[in-house]
Length: 245
Image (tube, rainbow, N blue to C red):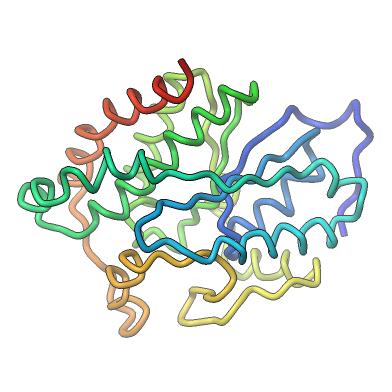
């Protein structure tokens, strides 16, 4: 489906936050042929977060779609973020909810734990570019808002890592077309979401349920989200330091 570049034309190793959903799968299919190595990172936060085998299945499908020459350059890891989640979110959940008055603290905190683990992984493997599948079509999710992404980008920069969002401006239809050309199914379509092909987080599903059922966006105030992230980033930096002495 994609022209295979010769080794001298390939970009450096790159890592991608990978659930196996529509956007991260489309990003993986686009990035893998262009880099010497693609490290797909899936996470397990240990608090009602299950179904990581779905991500493994998607990796197998991507390798098959791209062929052996590209597929053998794809590495997949399922990383535990339980301890990070405990410190960033669980230990202070009651206090944080009283301060921020919104359930977004669980989803945003969980994503920050993933970013901290990703930064550590990149340092461990000498990777200088980290990507994720954030998309403007799903920016109702607090962790995919432009504000959140800009603050996360600065977080990675502190470790000498570039953070990119290769499919952010790509339409959902374009992502579906990429998967279709690869012979992969996008999943069960509900509104503009696709279910059943990526891990499930019980808390996250409940928080965004009004959108899935009634197409009702959950509102987040930038100043509140920004304050939350600013409070948590020093902890995230400490966690990276603990993981990579």
